[in-house]
Amino acid sequence: MSPYFSFLLGCLIGILVTLLIEIVIQANRDTGIQIVEKPPELFGTVRQKVGCEFISDLPYHPRLVKKVLHRMDLEKYTILDLQDLFWYVFKVHLHSKKDMIEFLEKEE
Image 1 (tube, rainbow, N blue to C red):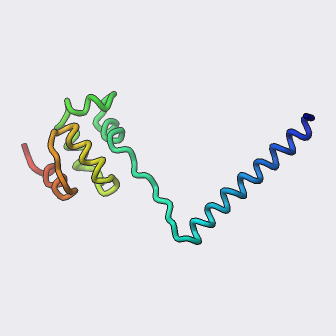
Image 2 (image 1 turned 90 degrees about the vertical axis):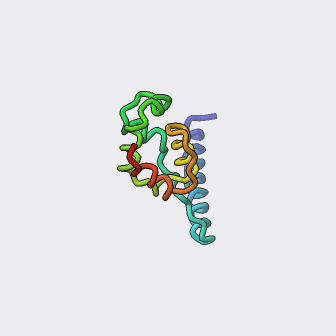
Image 3 (image 1 turned 135 degrees about the vertical axis):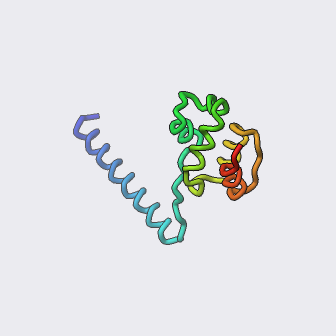
């Protein structure tokens, strides 16, 4: 196969992929399907804000985690992610964001 033919074939494939993406985007707009942005990764964010090197260090710093979570906007995160974090760090199972906020505001 000649280099010129390979170049043309590559260009054609690129154009077709671009058109296919545009068709999918337009189809989503036409059907009313909304592409929802994935929530930020909770464990990594908390790990970074607490200053731990590893996520596995978080349970050793519950007071710092509590302070960090108290300052964060918990509405950005899913209830399941929050429940996982609260169980992992504090060993408490809470069912609602309201309960979690109350837990964070409670003094030890």
